[in-house]
Amino acid sequence: MRAVDTTVVASVTLSTAVLDRLAAIVGPAHLLVPGSSDIYEDYGRDHTEDFLFVPAAVVRPGTPEEVAAVLRLCHDEGLPITPRGAGTGLSGGALPQHRGLVLSTERFNRILHIDQENLQATVEPGVVNQAFQDAVKAVGLFYPPDPASKGSCFLGGNLSQSSGGPKAVKYGTTRDYVLNIQAVLVTGEIIWTGANTLKNATGYNLTQLLIGSEGTLAVITKIVFRLLPLPTHDLTLLVPFRSPEDACAAVAKLFTAGITPSGLEFMERNAIAWSARYLNVPLTIADDIQAHLLVELDGNDPDQLQRDAERVYEVVSQFDTGEIEIADTAAEKDRLWRIRRNIGNAVRYHSVYKEEDTVVPRAALPALLKGVKEIGARYGFQSVCYGHAGDGNLHINIIRGELDEAFWKEGIREPIKEIFRLCVSLGGTISGEHGIGLVQKPFIGIALPEVQLELMRGIKRVFDPKGILNPGKIF
Image (tube, rainbow, N blue to C red):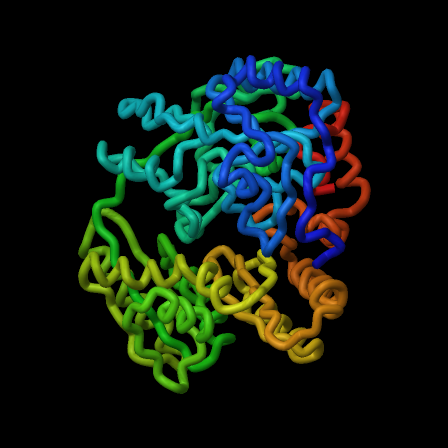
């Protein structure tokens, strides 16, 4: 289990005086303590394996000023506090490892303004990604970052991890769309980190510093996003391969042929098959097919999309492929993307597992996949691999299967280290979009030298001198 307890009860006891002050700040209905709610323990979980850390209390502020008052109280009292979004993370970033308080952003759920003239929107961090996408789409605009959990994850959590998703291959990740952030510092000051402009060369870029900081530096209370015009057409193709390495090798070939897909996803056989069964949707896979690429093309010129699709056919014809499926209708496109987006849920349903979020330059994908399978063979575990192939981002799901308890708790660390060392040797790193959080921090030294880690610790000390804000994460 990577030297982390799976279930830990609250060990921080809050005095009646502190609880009374918290209730006065957020209102009694928005202060939860153990036993006060049937869902209380849910605030001690996220989607990371089976961890549970029960907090001493949960606060649900509704304004930046309430957040500021809660943080000042925690800073004065030396209480650990863990910011939390929807709890869909996969690295333990929202788990209150040191118990204390959980600060939930669930009440910050408003889209404040969509500026159609400047292609911008101001939102609160508790807005669900899909709800935001739908709102801007309704006025002909486009917010591309689309994590697999887009139907439930919060935008604030997306900033915390700099989330990506399938469309990152063409449009970039969350950090590419953030212009400005309203944030509350641990001592209670409310600041804006940047400006609502496309250019900003005024001092250090605090906006980008907060993105990907996993709630360890400040609490986000408003976000200003830049938007794009909405593409009007798209095509989706499912390309079957008889070799997983061929599927990975085809990725770089597509780009060198001048094709820039809006989505390019790799799914090995068990990934796509398990997901289809989990969803109970029809999918026929020939016995000799071992992997698929899901290719999406988008734009405003349907004739150009057809030409791009023909180029895709030309490129993949260099490899040993099966019959390519073209999704002709919206329902067919939705079926294929539902299968892709539910692979994580299907793996979770199928078995106990550990997911590693590796990323390498896209041309190194075949070597990464081959190496992962060789490591699995040496240590005796099965892996199910899938991910954002166009970014070189491979999600490696290590399946427990028949592995014994001792190996699963401790021995598994060695092959995970080998996988991460392989990533770094190929020019990659140990997390593409899930963050470091709690479970990856023992391995961060594989990717980053000590001098770089000490710079990051120094930044943390400036923002959070008492070390109370999401303690135990990253370092």
